[in-house]
Image (cartoon, rainbow, N blue to C red; front, side, top):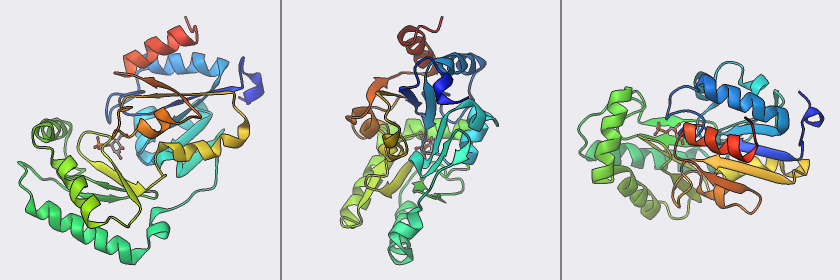
Length: 252
Ligand code: M1P
C-alpha cells in the first residue's frame, strides 16, 4: 500500500515490540493485528525493536514486511521500507575485533564469578548492531525467564554488571540498555532506538508518534520517547496500546 493512499500519509506511528505490541517474547494477538490493520489505512506504521529480524518474525508473524510500512530490527540497524531493505551498519565493524575481544573476555569472566541460581546457554548473543548479554542465558525457558527476572529485581544482577562494564570500559563509547527480562543490550552510543529515525527523517513526516513500555530513564525506549522528533506514548501492556490507538486515531 503506498503512503499516498492513506488518510494521513504525513503521520508515522512507530511501536516498540516487547510489552507494546506483544507480551515480552510472545506473540501478537489477533486483536492487535486488527487494530494495526485499521490504523494502517489512516497513517504510516512501523515497529522498532532491539531484537533481530528473525525473532520479530516469530513474534509478529511471517508477513511483517507486508503488514508494516517500516520494519526496524536491532533499533534500525536492519531496516525495511515497504518491504525493501534499506542500507545497514554493523557493530563489529564499528568496534573492531581487538576491543571486542577485550569486552567479551571481561563479560564471560564476570559472569563466571557471580552467584545466580540457574544458568542455561548463550550468555553473549552476537547480533549485527549490538551484543546482548544474559546472565541466565538466552536459552532459558519462559518459566526460567520469569524466575530470573524476579531474582534480578531483588539482587540487581544486571544493573551491577552494567556498572562494572561502564567502570572498566569508560572510553569504548558504548551504551548499555536493560530492555527485557533476562538480558541487557550493548551498542555504540547513539545506536539506541533513535537510530531508526535517520531512515525516516527525509520523508518529511509532520508527526511521528512512538509507543513504548520502557519509557523511563534507563529503559530502552527512553531516548526515542524523549526525542524532539517524536510524540511519545508510554504504555503498560499491548492492551493499553490498543486502547490508546482506538481513542487517539478513532479506530472504532
Ligand atoms: O525488546 C526488548 C528486549 O527483548 C529481549 O530481552 P530479554 O530477552 O531480556 O527479555 C532482547 O531481545 C533484547 O535485546 C531487547 O532489547
